Length: 415
Image (cartoon, rainbow, N blue to C red; front, top):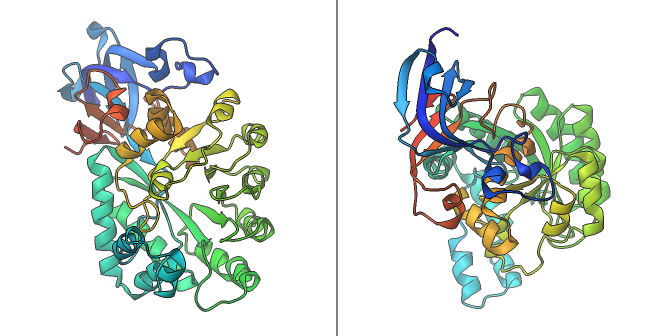
C-alpha cells in the first residue's frame, strides 16, 4: 500500500459492521458482539475512505498524518435520518399556551399549529431561514452527527418547497456534513387550497416534476394520517415519485392505523417513520420489502403518547430500526440525536447497542446510504467519531455527559 493520508492508532472500534455483529440475528450473544467491536485497532484512511483495519501494530502502512486515539472508542459518524430542520419562527408560545390549559382548537383559532410555521417560513428571508437552520445543524454536528436528512413541508407550494430544499442543499455545501433532501409537499394543506385532492394533483403534476428537474430532492415523503392525507392520495404521490425514479418513505401509523406502512412497503420504500400504531401482524411485510422502521421518541415524548411501536415484533422479524430526532418546531423541538438515543432506550426499550445501530448502520440504510456510511469497514466513508468513554453503551446512557473528542468527516479532522 502506498503512503496513506491518515492513520488512527490505539483505538477500540465499535464498527457496527453487520457482518460482525450479532444484531444480524434475533438473539444477542455477547454485549461486545452487538457493537461489532475490534479492540486495540488501527484505522487507515485515504481519499476520504477507510482503506485498512489492523490489529497488528507491526504491519501498519506509512501515513502522512498519525493520530493516537489513546485507547478511546471510535464509532461511525452519527446519522440523523429524519429532520424538518429548515423552518421559520418557532412555536414556543403554543408550548406555553398548552401548559396553561389552552385547547388545541383554540390554539388553531389563534393561527397556531403547522399553519403558523408555514406562515413564518414563507415570510422569512432566505438568509434568515438559512441562518436559523445552520444554528440547529451545528447543534447536531457538535454531538458527532455527520449526515442529516432535511425535509421540506413548511412551504406547501412549488416555489416555497423548492426554496426550502435549496437552502438544505446549501447547508450541505457550506458545512462539513452530508445532507440528504426529502420532498414532503404532502405534509399538510396549504392555505390556498380547500380541496385535498386538488392539492395532491398539484404535487403530482407540478411540484414533484419541477423539483426533480431542479435536482433538489433525493426522496419523496408523505404524511399518511387522518389529519394528513389518505392512503389513496399518498399512492398517487408515490406513483409519480416512482415515475421520476425517486425513492419513497412515509410518516405513517403515528396517530392511527391506516396501513400507510403497507403502502410504503408496496413501493419498496426506504423507511416508515413514527409507526406507534403499526400492527405486529404487518411487520413481516416490512421485512420482505427491506424497509427500515424509523423510531422518533422525541415526538412520542413531546406529545405524551402512550401507544408504543411494536418493538418486540420488529426484533423478531429482524427489521432494521433507526432512531432520529424528528427535529421540528411543533412536536419534537430537540436538536440532540444523543437525547433521542437515550429516549429510544427509556421509552421504547431499545438496548444501547440497538440505539447506536439506529443512528449509524440502520440510519444510513434509511437514507439509501447503507453501502457507504454507518459502519466502520474497508471501502466505507471515513465519517468517524472518537469518544472518551469506557464503553459505547455510555453514548445512550448519559445525556450531555460526554462529547466527541474528535470528529472526522471523510477523513478530515473537524475538531
